[in-house]
Amino acid sequence: MSLDWRSYPLSTWDKGRFFHNRACPPSPASGDTEYMDTVHYQALEVLYSRQQIAERVAEMGAQITRDLSGEKLVMVGVLKGAAPFLADLARAVQVDATFDFVATSSYGKGLRSSGAVKLIKDLDEPIEGKNVLLVEDILDTGLTLSYLRKLFLQQHPKTLRIATLLDKPSRRIEKIEPDYVGFSIPNLFVIGYGMDYAERYRNLPDICLMTPDHPE
Ligand code: IMP
Ligand code: MG
Image (cartoon, protein in one colour):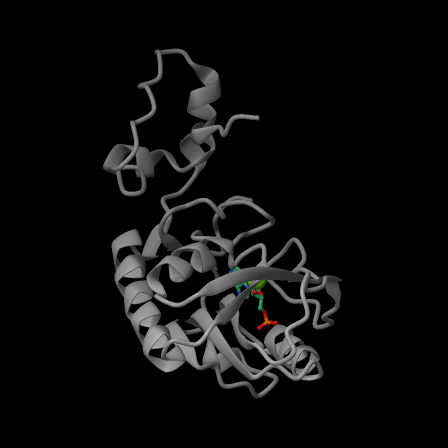
């Protein structure tokens, strides 16, 4: 199934805000009503551009490389949101690394968390005695990462560190201290670079703000 770029805000095409590295979609033929239907979409505000993300991820990678000082590493991504971050972070980390992935119960289809966390997909390989880096897109209430941290510690890894691209400290319910934080943000709902709203927008290359009045 091909992506329909017409479902993105019209103004982002006009300004080339998101797609300046891509071929622009063709101009609409006059009377193209399907195209005109997208006019009601609002512009998405960019919170962190792909360049800002790349620079910060490079810094995080350098720090992790220093901290691991030649040791092996298992990078564990939390599906699905952490996938782009893990892919970029892994290439910024100069250590002998392997990947694994877990999935927890999702945030649901709206802006609010259900509160309960359950494991949907477990690790493929045991982590006992290994250096583990838990990689998450965004740390919000802390429920997901505290749950995973507790679960992983039961397996007695050699070390367990947490890297999150975004952190919303004001939303915290469960106390958890990430070792590496890309950006600390206020209580905003963000999309892009892996993060979704009802499973959409994960492939936006920038991190954008989801405004309450944005059409679903
Ligand atoms: P926590 O368990 O409340 O810390 O939630 C973490 C998960 O909620 C993240 O991995 C995201 O999947 C999701 N989440 C939290 N805030 C946002 C947001 O602003 N945009 C998209 N997903 C979010
Ligand atoms: Mg997530």
